[in-house]
Image 1 (cartoon, rainbow, N blue to C red):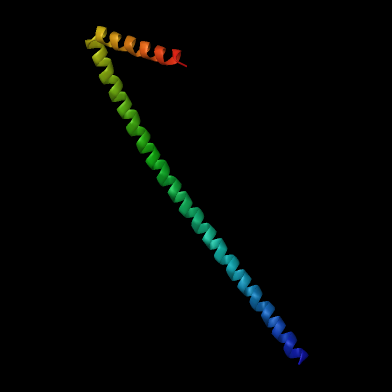
Image 2 (cartoon, rainbow, N blue to C red):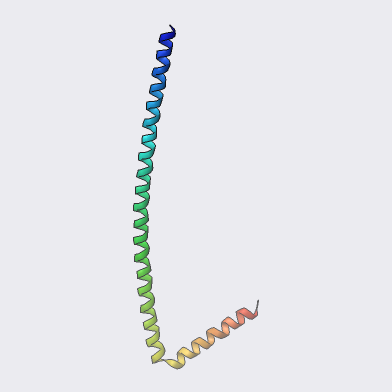
Length: 96
């Protein structure tokens, strides 16, 4: 009876070791998958960020060109707008 009990215990230990190794392998596979997925998402986010920053930069350059053309065509009007903005900022800062 002791032999059967010892054999059962050894079989149980062997099966638990095998199960432990299989679970460890599954965890490693899942970890690798998540790392790969994270890297793909990071690359996608970087590409989106680059596209957005390029679009913003292009728009800013376009607005700067249009503003430059307007100021060159209407210097006194642009000076008046700048002076009015300065007075407004001064009033707002003085109220603090």
